Amino acid sequence: MKRLATNDPSGRHICYRAYVSGQGWQKPVCDGTIAGTSGRNRPIKALNIAVHGVGGIAANAFRHTAEPVDGRGKRQPSWTAVTGDGRNFTIGSAKRNAPNMLGFAMSVGTGEICDTVRLRGHDWGGRVCSKPRPDFTFGGTLDNEVWLEAVKLTV
Image (cartoon, rainbow, N blue to C red; front, side, top):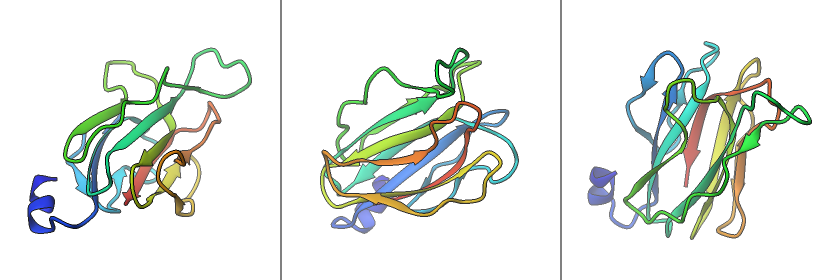
């Protein structure tokens, strides 16, 4: 992120990496590059994210639950605090036996944020975008039996 911000100080960027079941943390990628795996049946457990030029970012993970009430997973207890540009944060969990991520919600302070996701048993979905807070984008599913395999994020 620091290198992108130095080379393009007035630009907007998002960098992220996925914690993938059976692989661990992947190398960071930025601005629409794939994080996770595509069609390999490996769920994402967590996402680590940092932004530049968007007035900060906040997010929440939607995760698998062992005891679904209505066939849906559960969101994390609360959204992250707004994390300023250049600082990273994590949604989901990289702990041993952490639940799979089913989806996520994200919001930025200025401009827009967009996502494209790939879910277990599905092809890539369409690109979804949202305006700044209080709007947010949702990528993924609420279905407790389907999980997030890969993401592409842009700002």
